[in-house]
Image (cartoon, rainbow over all chains, first blue to last red; front, side, top):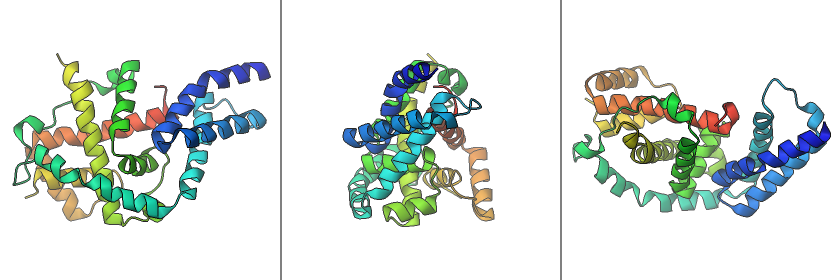
Length: 192
Length: 60
C-alpha cells in the first residue's frame, strides 16, 4: 500500500514539477516546492481521502507551497518588472485594433470549434502550456495567481503591490495573449 | 457605443468582478452586433475552464 503510494507519487512528479515551473518561472524554486509537496504527501498520506483523485490532492498541497513562495518574494520586484512587460502592450494593440478600437480584419476572433474535444487531447495541453509559457513573466504570474491559485484580485494587488486598475489590465493582457496564442497555434488549424 | 477594444477589457473583468448595470448593458448590446467580440467572450470561458482542468480540476 505504502509502496504503491510512493510509486504513484514518483510517477506524478513530472506533472507537479511542470505545474510549479509554469507558475514560479524558477527551476530551483519549483524543485523546492515539489520536494516539500512530496514530503508532505508521504508523511501525511493518511489525510488523503479518495473523494478526489490523488493528483488533485497533490496539486492542492503544491498550490499552497507555491502561494507561500510567492508571499515570501518581495513586492517591489513584482511591481517594477510589470513595467517591463507593458512595453509590448502598445504594439500588441496596434496589431489587433484599428484607430477607432475595432478589430482589424485579420485579428477578429473566430469561433473555436468544440473546446471539449480539444480538452481530451494531450496535444492541446502541450500547446496550452506553451502558450502560458510565452506570456511575459510577471503578467503570467498575476494570471496564475488568479486562475490557478484562486486569489481574488484584491489579494493580488496586496501581494504584488500593483494598483487594482493595473491588476485588471494585466489580467486582461494575459487573457488577450493567451487566447491569441491558442487561436493561432491550436484552434485555427482544427477546422481545416 | 463601446469599441471592441473597450469591450475586451470588460469581458476580462467580468471574470473577476461583478460588472455594473451600465457596463453589463453596454457589453450585451455590443456582443449582440459584434461577432468577433461574441467569439471572444466564449473564449474567455474556455480559458477559465482550461485553467481549472490544468489545475487539477479535471484530468488533462
